[in-house]
Image (cartoon, rainbow, N blue to C red; front, top):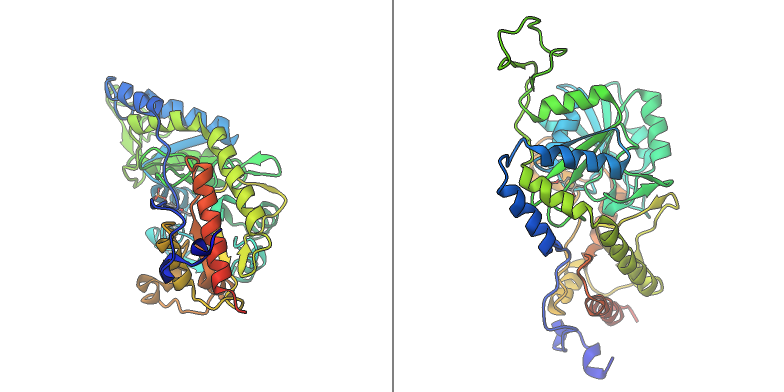
Amino acid sequence: MGEKMEKPAIAGGVPVRDEMIYYGRQCIEEDDIRAVAETLASPLITCGPKVDELEKKLCGITGAKYAVAVSNGTAALHVACLAAGIGPGDEVITTPMTFAASANCAFYCGARPVFADIDPETYNISPESIKEHITDRTKAVVAVDYTGQAVEHEKIRKICDEYHLVFIEDAAHAIGTKYNGKPVGSLADITTFSFHPVKTVTSGEGGAVTTNDPGLYRRAVLAHTHGITHSAEEMHEKDPEGSWYYEMVSLGYNYRMTDFQAALLISQLGKLEKFSRRRKEIVARYDREFADVPGIIVQKEIPQSDTTRHLYIIRLDLEKLTCTRREFFDAMSAENVQCQVHYIPVYFFPFYKNRGYERGLCPVAEEVYRGIMSIPLYPLMTDKDVDDTVCAVKKLASYYLKK
Ligand SMILES: *Cc1c(COP(=O)(O)O)cnc(C)c1O
């Protein structure tokens, strides 16, 4: 780097690149577009064969016995809570270091989310903190695979078995990740996925739940399609008037995915290994580059997790730097590297504050939040995009380092 390059763009220097790069972006190719177009021209564009094909494919990839495709990851969380029988008066333990939907799903069911703190190095929910927050009302745990790293399955499983809790895994970040060699999706009692365009594979909007439990599966199926059944076994009327007859047996929603979204996702899932490989390559490069950069802390991984990373987090060691997170973030933008922050602790939001959640509930999450930002990570990044991002982080860390 020359003299000019070392001065940050925000202080009048030359930016590391001319074109803005963003923290995440989908990869849609010709064959994905063809798959959607073919399904749009077919007789059934919803409730058709592509959704069944997708559900089978998801079972194959996750190793789960059952999968239900739904309209988005938030619907998947709602369906999971309904299947788990969560209702008014119940408590659901989750992490504050997540997108609001992981906690909101408890409120959808009239229950209350309770926030356990995170591990200071992996940033995933701390099993010890889950245990400390269990009460007589606790019904379930929603554990989030933050950035794609698998949660501590062995420890959480043990706690859930001991206290008879339903283990719900929010794997919105984690399709393709394995824990002790087993794919995420077959490990918790019920797992939810999101296929929003920033996630590893996409259907535009979309989600799914997977489970090995036939009871949870049937309740999830009913919840995502109006609580309506056509199955003779589930119907109360044992002598139906005719073949048109069906019954609504519980209160459900319309959370169905369309067939052209399913076609897109089937095509995307065919590329999961390719996407996963490229993401791992970029993560390995970042880890190497940042390991010894003063002022930058890298997220730690547990050895059990073979991670397909959705987000790459850098954490500023604010003690060592002269800048705030905001200054560093704005300086990255000035270099034409647009970061994002994942996440504002959920209970900081006014909706939560108005319901009695106060700052200070999870001191580790709050402290981690002060220093984090997500830098660009997606399969379509070129080696030059990665170089530029590395260069911007190093340049700013060195510029802001306390002397
Ligand atoms: C994206 C996301 C969701 C919600 O998924 P949508 O498909 O956007 O509804 C839930 N939880 C986490 C952790 C997410 O990142």
